[in-house]
Image (cartoon, rainbow, N blue to C red; front, side, top):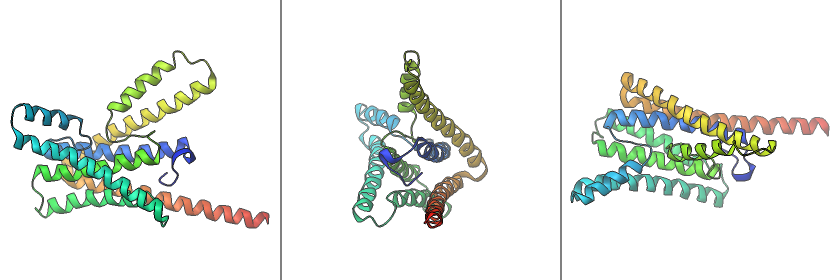
Length: 244
């Protein structure tokens, strides 16, 4: 799920990572919003608020929204930088570092808020938007832009296009392909929604400690992927020796 990239990825690879990351994004989205009353998984709304404050000549207020956008951008840049570095060195799975970084940021928010070292809503938003920038970047690269998990606008646009295509496609092979992409979009939307419900419920019980659950899910997905990869390698070696 975290290992193959581009054309080597199967539908199942994309479906698995879409489920995990959209669920995580849903948790972060609701927990972040309930904690600071700001969107923490995308920057579309923040861009509109930034422009509005500029038009109202409230430059200092608009600066906060501008930094929200920049935080997401820096997260995306950092994630891509780590992936490019890993590709050059070929020392490890290129998506391990971005996943670990995102998990670390989510846990950092929990630790800093618990220690009362991070009480500013803006500070929490900067870190969460950075983490979501990291996630959006690496899932875009790993799936060759097939999977997006931190915001739904593009997903609903693509879903509408693909549903309309079904009315005109007659060839079975093409209809099957479109059905697969529709299935993927529906899973992402559903698990983002489910993650939001879980995130909201957890926030009411444990507040921002809900982010620990999101980090654990990310790390569990990474560990599962690594163990599955090792198991398949061992199985291939065993079958090769058996046939030799």
